[in-house]
Image 1: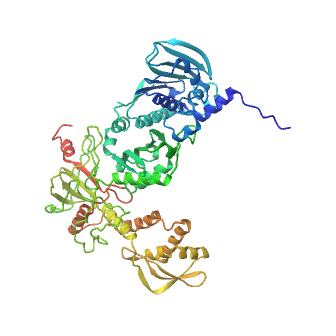
Image 2 (image 1 turned 60 degrees about the vertical axis):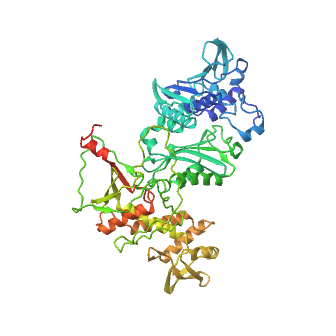
Length: 616
């Protein structure tokens, strides 16, 4: 006989709910701090011991809990944030489910001390395992202090799944880090084992919060982002180049002030930063998105870390567009990778392969009115680029005028300027070539080292990407090639005939299982074989919307890398001048298509320090 269906006891229900909301000490910290923020706190202190397992405390200066509400605060599904189901469509607070405090209390020993502004004295409440043991008066400042001891003391299975205290402490630190970045207007302090790990001023400036987390060097290297599209306001900072990281843990997204995980937003960010970070690295970011509350559903998961957007495509396009625009304000010459020389490093030794006088280059630019850098999405007319620099170089012509956004104001913290270009135009000098790989250039107060392969690869890649968006003339074959295809591929060919002709193919049916190839595409003057057709068909078969930009980009990247001059190849003086001048004229992206930097800079000051001409 089947077992009877019974309602679970409240104690069991509470522990099940706690397992959904409170996975570890970091989750408890997150829930308690979010309650503090919803209570209007402008200062929050988090203290943990043993990673928060044995002890964690969250103290705030918020509005406090009224005496007649104190028991209800520990009840499940009790909240002041919403009153009806309709309110779920416009959730504007961090907490609203009414589960946090009840779930934490169900699996720990909680002491809550609180006072409102209108009360002369405060209250202290002790709760163990979800049961209130005592309520008494207590002297305390306005606000609330939650002390949580012995987390999961009554759920040994859950306790056994926790990591070592040091690991749990790192999870808490990560949680507080994102809370600091989410609310720059709140002063946060994190204390672990008596040591302050984070202290944010709470002055309302996101740059200050980023500084508190990542430090001055990271902040200086990040780009400020500010813009809006499709009803989405986006602001924050993005780290590319040397600020790229080996995983996505340094990507922080905030929706209406709430920290969220979103594969959609990460993908949009990475699309905007494509070629600006090395392959295998990911851009870092602190991005705030503000949008109507009804445009996003935060009630997806009990921990409120995941969201659903009403219009995912619009949000994705907004992030990609706004971030990409923020990255267009400087090119390789204006923002090289700085190379500080620490005192303990070995002395710099370099041999310049040319013993003649430096060659002055007349093409110099500067100022905010410079054209925006080339992006592969745009077909902007530019000066021609030679197929290889060992052939006759193409004369440099001025780039077509283009509108460039004014540079965004720098983060509101004292810091060194990120660009060394001066308003007045100064000449540069090509000094020579180091190791047959790095072109040495003196400009302003910097020594620039330019990777000849990376620069040429970037120039070729940009040119081919621009050309790939236009109808291509292919190579006519004297004798058409007969290629066997499946019935499925025949259908794909018919559906995408115009697209295939656009990239240089001329194809005709030749029986039921064969086609005649009369013309094939040309890339940098080289005809592509029939194998290229099969690659395209494979891509089209898996992509109903056609030959994707990603596949096209991959093929072009391979070709650009193959045709670019290599490190170790000897270049003529004309080749060297051509590379440098084209860099200046075309305002290239500061990285090669693989994400490696084109230019590394050493400042005059750094050299003076190394030679002891000035003190550190």
